[in-house]
Each structure stands twice: as C-alpha cells, then as structure tokens.
Length: 452
Image (cartoon, rainbow, N blue to C red; front, side, top):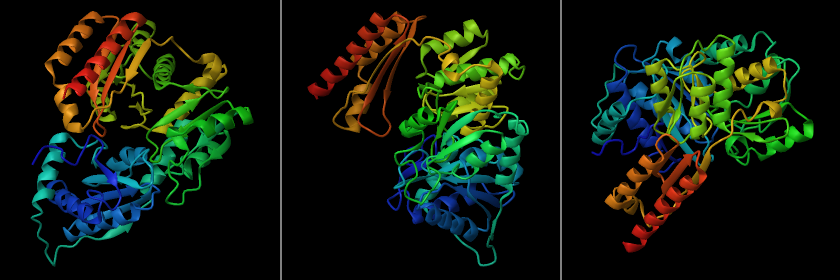
C-alpha cells in the first residue's frame, strides 16, 4: 500500500460518515493503534471539538480500543493545545483529537498525538495504514478495556493558562474581542480572559454541533474586526474550531499578519529575558522580510521549514527554538506548549503589548514586508498536477529563479494536496524580479497544461 494514503501531517480528515471518516474506519484505526502503540500502559485519551459527528467517531474509536483490551479516558470537548500540552501528565500511550480544525462542521478528522504531545511521524502512520488495510484483528473475551471520563487535562490546562496570565495582571485594563468560532474555546477562553483581568466581548461562543467555524473564527475574522471598531477595543482575537490557530486585529480593526506576530513575540520574549537568544522558526511560505528582521534586528538565528506545523515543531525541538509558526496562524511558543496554541499566544501577546505601553496600531507593523507574487494556476486533474510539477522545463525555470533571487528572495512551487493546483509563490526585496519570476512560472505551467 502507498505510504500515507489516508494520513497527512495532521492526521486523517474528510467528510463525516464518508470514508475514511466513518465509524468503521475509526474502529479499525483504534484496533491498529491498540496493537502498534498501546503496548505499555494499555490506555489512551480521546478528546473532540464541538462538531456533530464527534460523538459518533469517539464512540467508534472507544469501541475499537476497548475491544482490543485498551482503557479509554474521555476528555470531552477540549482544545487541541490542551491535549498536546497535558497528555504527558495523563499516563497514557497516546491521545487522539477528533477535529477538522478550521473546516466546516460537515468535515471531521482524527489527529494522532504521541505520549509526549507531538504528532505521529510519517513512518508510524504508514505502519498504521498497513494494519488498517489488512484488517486482521482478533478479540479475546477476557481482554476488554473500560472507559472513564476525566477533566484532568482541562484542569491542568486552565491552571497553566492562569499561571501565564500572572494571577489576573496580564490583561488588566485591556478590552478584548474574542471570536471563539463556536468551537473548543467557546466556554473556557472568555472565562479565562476575564480571570486574567480583561474586559471581554465574546463572539461565536454558542456551539450547536453545526455552527463551528461558520462565518466566524480565524477563517472569517470580519465580525471580530467590526466589533473591535464598534467597541473601541484594544485588539481582537479569532481562533479556529480546535484552538490551535490565531488571527489578530489591532485597535483599528486591521488584521496583523502571522509573520508580524512571530517577530513581536520573539522580540518581547528576548527583551523580557525569556528567549535567551534562542532561534525563530517559520516555513518557506513566510514573508522573506521576517528572516531579515529576526537576523538583523533581533540578532537571532532563523530556520525555514516545509509548510505545516509539524515541520516547524520538529525544527524547534532540534534547534531549541523559542518561537515558531506559519502564515496560516499556527504559533508555537515552546516554553508554553508543543503545538499551536491561540490562548497562550494571545496571553503572551497581551503581556508584550502592555509592556510596550502603546496601542497595537502603533506597534505594528514591526517591519516592511517584501513584495509577494502568489498565484494558483488550476490544472485539469491531480494527476496532471503531478506530471507538470515534475516537468523538466518547469524545474529548470524554478532552479534558474532560485539562483537569480538568492540572497534577496525565495521561490516556491508547491502542488496542492487537495486541489488540482500548483501554487506559485515568489517573495523578495526586488519587486520587478519577483513579479517577472512569478509571471513566467505561472505562464509556463499554463502552457504545459494546455499542451496536454
């Protein structure tokens, strides 16, 4: 079987009740994980977001684990960062987070989390896929697991948040708009921000199973921006359904790019003594001006990774990085957690803002961003994407522009994993060279498409 047929870097995802997001697949996944992973403690933890299909998938996963002799700890509705940050304290072999993150409620997914809070490697998920496909599971009458509910992860996460908030001092005097996407943070984020001293205006905090991410949250921050202007708030925070990505707007309702947030957090942690000259990590799709700011203004090492939160976290672990993230809104603060965490990022951002004594609109932007060319030429099929992405003419042009922009910019050709697209991303300090490279690569892709 082909490697990672079902699993990506963030688990498996799809439309609920349609393969692979079916009860049968979840059951088989649990049976495979029970055999491959749950060999020591014989216990797993399962959490979910607020979407309707979460109960069905949790029941199916639980049945598969218990039929295989593994105990299940049900954590209930919980943000992904609470699971990744607390799983090491639960004495389990692994955890599973049932969520489709920022996707609409019709979708769902299963994130696989190791006992120390990290995501599964491609090698491990490939082994799981082999077992799932084989379906060779046996069950014994005298080896059954049991299920219990626990709020230990929620309690531990709340305590950690309040510690970071500084016993109510971090947000005192700040008026904040929170858009919780009708997701996992709907209850605890407004409550914890109030306990941290903030004046809170909460939006999208009434999940009904079908409204998660619907015209709200990090994918649709317009309501947050409008409310910040209306309420004359100091800033706004919008999260996604499972709470691992964040969008921020300033006191004028203007969105702040993730690269700017990463730079601000790195500078604040360095000035406060928490960073201790540790590196910053982001992806190849982050604006090239971020690297220049980190290296030249902050004097810190900078590392660029492939797209995705997992490569960022892996590089942070490898280099000892303090701040990492990607343009999609995942921001990782390694001293506060091992995955993107909107709550922790917002709290540290608020602390830094208070320390600056300025309005957010006066703080941002920290640096002028380099010119960006970003187009997504659409092809006829995903098979054609694969053929054209490997075409020698295109690859030769790609290498040529990488060389031409060396030292002043970056070129990325990235086939989409879900649509028949090839993303053409060129960024750099010379706008003319950036646009010329981007236009030529896009035109070449379209010519190759039309020639097939």
